[in-house]
Image (cartoon, rainbow, N blue to C red; front, top):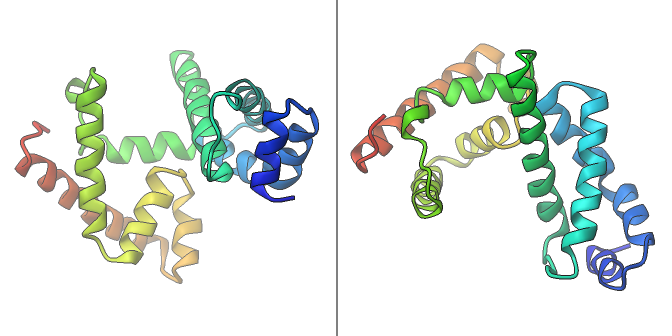
Length: 186
């Protein structure tokens, strides 16, 4: 079933929409959530919450790219789960590691509180990413958006894990320099 047909089922309020979403995207959603949470049960709960959010939001939204739409939802839900876990001090996920790696580029006291500032920062990061070589950009997005394990990313590029760590470290350094040049106090 195509994404357009699945979205049509959501709009028609047919429960078959969730079944079709599970068939097509459950593995993708579980992987994305597990990369953030590193816990199968929490990931499954996040995936189920994603189906509910999609169900409740579809009459108002008609996404052109269902995979991206669901990916955004699962990422937000998983990060919320992660934040709750942090408050209980039990975290060892890929997201925690990748978030920590980015910490030297985006300090907590400089994280924007207002939506406008957040969008400006996101645009600056996007501008920076578009100037990277494709390989660097893909590796960066896989690590810091999808929270893919370093070893998995390195294998995908036929590199050693150490080489991948070095490449991402250098990208983070360049991002930090780019943001400083644009007036962000890092």
